[in-house]
Each structure stands twice: as C-alpha cells, then as structure tokens.
Amino acid sequence: MALIKSISGIRGTIGGKAGEGLTPVDVVKFAAAYGTWVLKTTGNSTIVVGRDARISGDMVNKLVCATLQGLGINIIDVGLSTTPTVEMAVPDMKAGGGIILTASHNPKQWNALKLLNQKGEFISDEEGKLVLEIAEKEAFEFAQVTELGSYKTDNTTLDKHIQAILALPLVDVKAIQEKNFSVAIDCVNSTGGIAVPMLLEALGVKTVEKLYCEPDGNFPHNPEPLPENLREISKVIEKGKFDLGIVVDPDVDRLALINEDGSMFGEEYTLVAVADYILKNQVGNTVSNLSSTRALRDVTEKAGGAYYAAAVGEVNVVNMMKAQNAIIGGEGNGGIIYPELHYGRDALVGIALFLTHLAKSGMSMTRLRASYPSYYISKNKIELTPEVNVDEVLRQMQERYAKQPINTIDGVKIEFDKEWVHLRKSNTEPIIRIYAESDSNATADHLANKIIADIKEIISVKA
Image 1 (cartoon, rainbow, N blue to C red):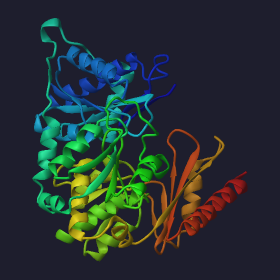
Image 2 (image 1 turned 90 degrees about the horizontal axis):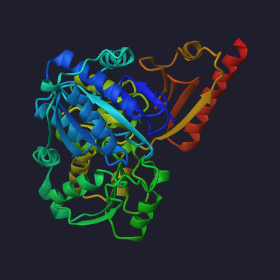
Image 3 (image 1 turned 180 degrees about the vertical axis):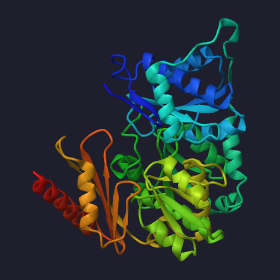
Image 4 (image 1 turned 60 degrees about the vertical axis):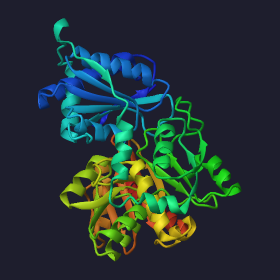
C-alpha cells in the first residue's frame, strides 16, 4: 500500500490501514483540512468537486462531499468530468476552490485529491504546506446541524468547456469539417470517453473509431499515454485508413498523437506543434519545463518569440507563463496550457488547436512531424546509498561543468550547444533523475552515460 502526502494533494492506493493507503479515514482527514483552508483564506463556502472514472471514484466522491458539507461548505458536484473542466468551473461558479478526484496517469488501484484555488489553478507550494499542517494537527472544526452545507449536482460544465473551446478565435471548425478527418481514439475507459467524442462531434469530425471509451474505470492497459502502452491503437491505425490517432490519460490533461502510419507523433511534440500553430498567428513567448524538448525553443525563436524554462511541475510552468506573459506553454508529457482559455493543462483545447493546425497545414501527420527539429530524450536514473549527500553531488557537477550554460532553478541543467542534460533529485528517495537530449537516441544515451560516470566518480572520490 502507498500513501503520498504532498503540497499538491494526497494520493495513494485504495485500501489498507489508515495512514498507509488511501483509506476513507485519510480521505476524510485531508478533505477536512482542505475545506478548512478554503474557508479561512477565501471566506467562500462553495467548492466544486469532479472526478475521473476510476472504480474507487464514487466512494471517494461521497466521502469528500459529505466531509465538506460537515464543515458547512456547499458542494457543486459536477460528476464524471475532466481536470481542465473542473479548473474552468471553479471561477465560472464563483467557488472558493475545487477538488478533482483523479490519480492522473496512475494505474486503477490509485486515486487522489487534487486541490485547486479559487482561480481554478493548482494550489501553490506555500498553500499546500498550510493544508498539510492543518491535516497533521487535525485543526478543523465541523459545523452544527443547522449549519451543514448543501449539495447539488451540475451536468452542464463539460458542454460549457467545449463551447468555450469552439469560441476561441484560433479554433477553426469549418477548416476541420472540410478536411473530413478519420480519427481513432483511445480514452482508457475513463472520462475522456465522454469528453473526446463530444468535442470531436462539435468540431465536425464524423468518422471516429472508439477504443476504450466506456467510463467504467477498468483501464485496459497502463493509462499513461506512452508509446509502450499504445500498441493496440497503433496497430488499428496502421491497418486502417485513419488520418491520426488521439490518446488521453484518465483525467484528460495529457494528449498523445499517433501518425497515419501508426507511428508515434511523440508526446514531446504535442506542445511543439500546437505552439507552432499559435505562433504562426501571434508572435509571443512560450514556456515549458526544464526537462522538455529544445524543439519548442527552436520553433519559438524562429517565429520571433522568446522561450523560457520553468522548474518541473504544472504550478511552476503556470507561474513562469504569467511572469513572461507567454501565449502558450506546457510540459513535454503532452500537457497543453493555453491562457486564452485557462491556466491549466487541457487535452481538449489541445485537440481542437492541433486539428485546426493539421487542417490548415495541408500536411499528413508524418509530414507535419518531419517539419520540426528532431530531438530525442534519454531518461535515466541513478540510485544512491542513503548516506550520499545528493545536494553536494549536484553542486560538484555544477562546478565540473561551470564553463557551460547552467540553470539551477530545479536541480542542475547543463547545456552543450543544442544538447542538454538535466539532473534532478527525488524528494522521497536517494535517486538522481538524469534526462539528456540530443539529435539521436544514441548520442542522447551517450551524453547521459557520460554524466552518470561523472556522478559515480564524484561519489567514489568522496568515499
């Protein structure tokens, strides 16, 4: 069993003993802490709650809603939904915050409470620490019987989300309709199975092959939209006559695309392609995290904009986007953040913008992908013994490569012309994650192995 309490919320595997898994006791305790924080900081007694289609979702939803009502909070339950839909619903409904019940790309035995502020954005590090402190001290007080909160449902939020997407100036429904795209989708039996077909119908896409669109929470494969988990839809596309494939994760904030020949467009290139389209229509700045592909920087600078790198994590990317007035941003895991709509990763707006781009480009998926600079990321980790001082290792690596451009806002990122390596320590175990990017898999692996050798040398010298 696993239970992880962090500044962004609480997540864990269902069952087990309290404090060791995500049990009803843990759900109630953390929901009470968050509700107390909302009341204290906003004075607003309304909270929006939505969930993905996980098997445990209904149980967790009832626990959360009842706990918040017990604090005197009024609940708007939007039911089966997506993370970006709930994010948009919070300010639209003038609520004090929101909770999304989803463990994102984790397997079906996991669930989580993701916490939003009254802007519909993920709470900050500082805010998360306050919630954790309230939970630890059990510093919450429940309402008297005459002051219990109300409960109501609202099934309009997803449609409002889609209508807001259709109203965006850079979403061209007519261009998409005229292309008469044939699309295969894999929604991993979660709420994407509701949202993605609704969106495609609204965009005028008539030919849709649905794989795993029954929102019953029985994930047919690992739900993280990585190439190794998408073999089935890849084969369907390879054998059929499709223009592209669309894959989302269980809470629909990550978007992966598949080419017409069944090959992967590349999750790193979802953001690159959407940004390219935005930048063709509006010069501006872009942001991604330090572990995302350099291709976004290349595309941005070619268009006359400036690229900025943020620390890993959606909150950090959003903060950097606001600071640099970025017109598009996100993460290399297929997360699109388009401020014109809202500040949150949103696969649905990503689909609409990408299909518009594909339609107007006149290219096939493979040709469009070939039009971007090709980079390859090698992802590695090195496990260390507990007595190793990881911070000291990173400091010495920074010294060793002091002549290279270095970014230290999140670990150590070292640039070598158009290659880079990013070293980040784990917050929970003695591990250094090592991401390296180059123009081929072989050279990216070589760069990563060189850095790993350097780290081992530093450790052996200290020993």
